[in-house]
Image: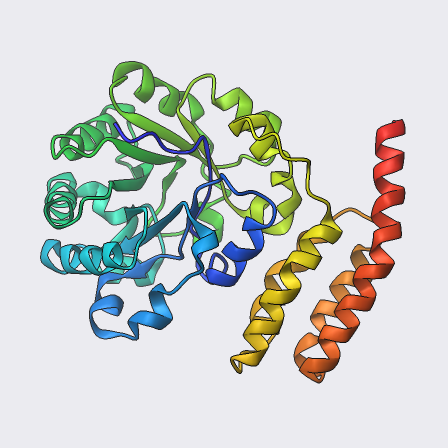
Length: 335
């Protein structure tokens, strides 16, 4: 079995693009990162470099695909593998109406045999792992036994790794946002999967906000996935490499992250890119600290300013925040 990192950041539409992933790599080098979900159709008929390009610093990196046609998924997976991704992940968890209309996402939990054919088709053409991210259940098909049957059918293909969002998905009546919050979390069902199917590798997703909670879940499952908390408060991951992966590197500071991002911002600007494409992902860097408001105000105004001037102001703000962070770290140590 290919062991996966003990922690990952969930694929999130409009959020986990290449710029966000590079930013997070300045905080954690070991956490598994995911692309946004990309449909097989988009890869087969769209701008492949735009969809799949990334920085080498982003590894380990998983490409999440959406679709339900085995042949198309296989071709998209083959293209993804050729671009150097570390694994291919099939989305069987998204509950949005648009995804349902395309016959992929969470509705595929009702067709485990089709999911198995999709996984098998991808496995035939790539040498990297093919994994599945799914829900506990869909609508009234929410029993533990139905979920276990789904996993067992897909696992017959040789698929060994499953990321389980510990909530059911309501395909009608709840928005995607509500589907992330309203259905109750059922962690025990995910723990039970690991107990009853110990030869498989299970990752738990849903409602995990802090590293202490990650360590508690790791007593029962193989890995944990954090979603929106990783976006809104990225420094949740500051101690991850040391606590979960045994890194001996010193803990990174927020200002060091800012400094590490400067060359990336500069290079993107030289390519003709807009800095807001990157800085919009960095809003939460100073979450909860005295400099947070000034930082957010600066980033929110980036798109309305001269881009070269923004880089200069970024440097000046970094210098000011050194003192803010130093004072905060000193107070935290004293406490």
